[in-house]
Image (cartoon, rainbow, N blue to C red):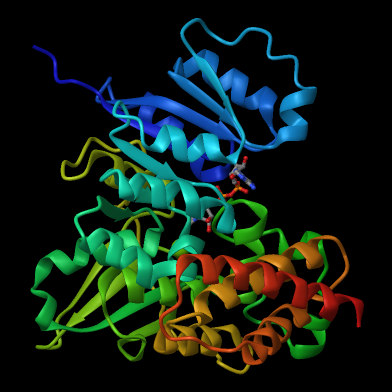
Length: 387
Ligand code: NAD
Ligand code: MG
């Protein structure tokens, strides 16, 4: 009897991670099947993906785009589900084995929460969810609600490297960072960075928000917080090292001084594939290392004055409570303002810092409180933009 396919709900299927996930599924020899696809507003592409992958559900979340779209040619047996609540509804369906959480920003939280509550496996790309509510999500998983498998390349690397020892033998997690496109610019040059320059990353092709986050290094700040919640390692034992080649995706240092790294050419299809097939490894769709060519790997400590976002990430990883939700929402709003031309590149991190220090910290917030603070932080950024 052939093995039953693992049924994957790809939330955010029209994004950079979503499209890569569909490549991984198409190359899986039937071991993986896309049972649901979701998009916000790029509905033509969603329809085209539905024709190719024949899912049970397509979810379209942006009401205005849904109303304007003709919906001709949806394949037979494929049901259209509308609105953000449709994501949570499909995440709970018994026919869904794994939810690939590849929606960008805090819009991804509710469906990941619903999937974990229904004891599903979540392959998590959407780091903002953990940054916002990592403490509560950790409690939910601890109560027997599902499991999280990291998709972020650094966290996939840590997850794999951590298998080399026991939790109490871990001394330090080391996240690698390419340094983004502006690693060597002077402060005066940074002031003049344009949207087009910030959107061009040297090693990765990604969605707009994470590309800007990589340029400001806020991405690494969010990843420090993400690692803190995923692996239960305090912020003080998580470091960042610049590694411009993006071959070593992160490292774990154990108490005896041994350091275990995970390496591969930079291609998000590999960590996506690892999470979707887990605990198996499948023949790769991604490019492999070429050991017949010489290869140089460089590592250097980041310039913390040039990249003040790192300190914000460390601060929030240490404080926990409400701080991650405020940082994440402020950053989402600040990046949107930068993309609109309403904020300078060099103002993104100071704006986030000022909102973070203005908020009333609470150590044990409820989910409702975090969502309130998410809205508050966005308003604060809009005031910052107007000043
Ligand atoms: P993207 O912008 O390319 O795609 C985002 C997806 O989310 C799209 O399918 C879009 O339709 C959907 N979406 C947007 N707003 C939505 C809303 N309000 N409600 C519902 N759906 C919405 O983003 P991406 O680069 O694929 O990143 C997705 C997530 O994965 C982010 O959290 C990012 O930090 C994380 N991630 C991305 C990469 C990467 O290489 N792109 C690497 C690591 C982690
Ligand atoms: Mg990453």
